[in-house]
Picture 1 (cartoon, rainbow, N blue to C red):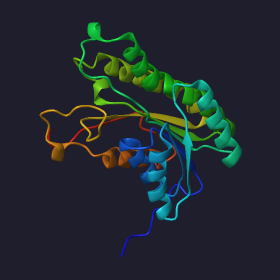
Picture 2 (picture 1 turned 90 degrees about the vertical axis):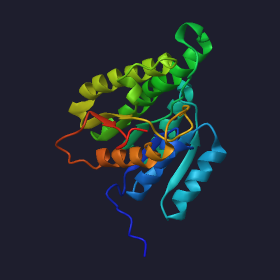
Picture 3 (picture 1 turned 180 degrees about the vertical axis):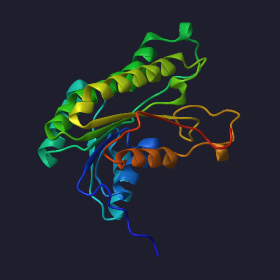
Picture 4 (picture 1 turned 180 degrees about the horizontal axis):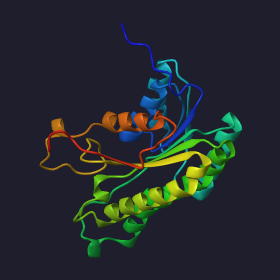
Length: 242
């Protein structure tokens, strides 16, 4: 017999960007199992609906919303939609991200640099700018920014990606200080090698890599943590080096 779903987030609303696949989809599924109403955000409605179908099959409420995190108007309209529908947002997971791996920095096209920095860093800014006021109004919320182990280490031929994630960490720590008096907890999650299609995994053993569900589990821990504390940063590594 399947176990009954945990309802620790019952009545809460979670917005997850980049929710059409990989880590974002896993986070959406996990938070739904914990009882949250999930808002799946991405650019590909068909893929979003595939994830939503699985969530709804478990009898959980889920909506999809197409938006591009690098478009300020898209995110402002998303926040207005969520506020109108639910009058609250309890959890914001800034997961949408892209990589550009291969060229050395001096060989990288400026448009590629802009795409990485705009998606991975500016997108988080737009989302926080649009959703934090809703959280401040209710004096409650969690903001989880999905970074990378690349925010800790040198990443040759991935300098733009590393820069965006180092920047996301600094943004997260600073916003945590800005919002803690409003009872809003801001955390950054830095996964190591994870089995997704974001980056190449040449020479790595896929069986030893992190799975998207491992990252989702940590997000679930963060948003169900006792109210008197919060983890500002979590680094996740595979048990065995892949």
